[in-house]
Image 1 (cartoon, rainbow, N blue to C red):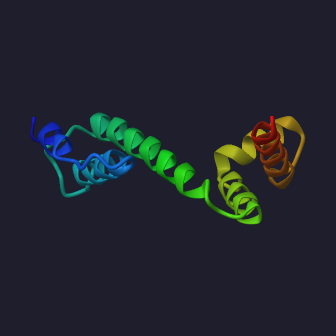
Image 2 (tube, rainbow, N blue to C red):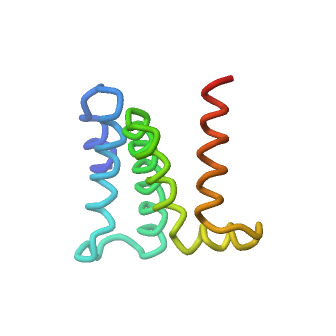
Length: 109
């Protein structure tokens, strides 16, 4: 109830909804908030992560190509992505190059 009321008060600027949702999710999943079940906190955290990714992708749309590749490489250093690269028989840097080139190809088509 209160969570949804706070979310409804969000300004109607394009990304404000996602920023507000991330903020509310962070408040709800704070360690000191003992009123929310652990499994529900995990689901709320997933929603916040999803919204943060949307915000990040919107912000990176305005970065130089070299910075874009650098950000992809940094993201792919995370363990869950290194596992994917290993399963493909390539390094995380090679996977980053592949993703960057595919994304660039998509922009050109």
